[in-house]
View 1 (cartoon, rainbow, N blue to C red):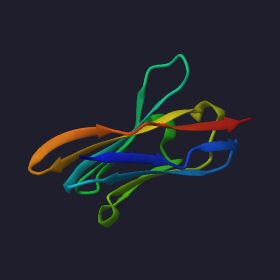
View 2: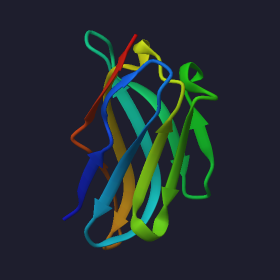
View 3: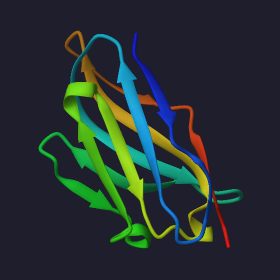
Amino acid sequence: QVQLVESGGGLVQAGGSLRLSCAASGSISSIIAVRWYRQAPGKQRELVAAIAGAGTTDYANSIKGRFTISRDNAKNTAYLQMNSLKPEDTAVYYCNVELVVSGVRNIYGGQGTQVTVSS
């Protein structure tokens, strides 16, 4: 059984910063990749950032240079540092973790955390 707990969302003024966390717990052998998605009201879910096992990262053009994805393998936790936030960053943010449990590769999703950026 694997659980993902997201935290760090909240209300912030434009130009401010937040750091989201995604902690995985359970009998995890290894984490292959972590992805952060977001979904704003009335819009489709979009991939914001991803980090692979080797540390390779990828970002959506809309957040490049402002957001940084990272991971702490020892803690089975991933982070999304969000700087210079804009009102258009307002959305529910979800983490998605691809990992191995008892030799089986699976993808787990978090419950989402609300990020609201006021102008």
